[in-house]
View (cartoon, rainbow, N blue to C red):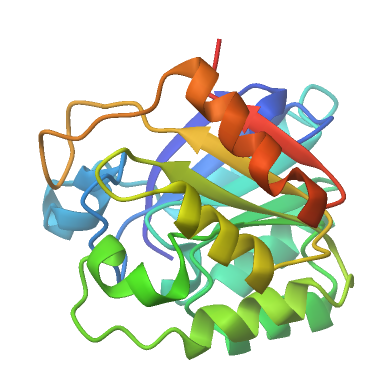
Length: 232
């Protein structure tokens, strides 16, 4: 498993749990606004790297201090060994959260079938018609993300959908398209874009707080719960 980083994070990254986040290198998408662009674009040999055993040893030493582990990236389901790592973390007594772009529904299903994932946060990049331009992949086939979303909405595991809002890519009309697609979902989060300084494309901007609140109200009727992140 290509583990490119490890850090302890707040409760925001895993609701109601103090968690360590494991970042995996590599991603199949090229979202211009990706805040972890170096994990996506940098050659593997240039990334900070941890062996799987090192990370598991670290987690074992934090039993009683941490409640959970977040598998993030990059795209964790792109990596061989993610399922085994999740199983090992569960065996240590940790709850496991997966951050995913939804492009690998078969691997997601296998994790759910094995019972080694407790929470899934799936990035919804944009309305389906604008996915190719938003993920930086011309002709991108959205059937995979639609399958993953439907799988999560079966309710087999706690989950959320989330969209990072970028002024140059997202409109109110796009959010309404997403809302109609995912209507009835348990939880939807709008994250305001923040420039990390290591983006794939520069010159991008987030929304003003009042705009984010207004956008949340537009889609609120479609979801059981709506939340905002990155908004004062």
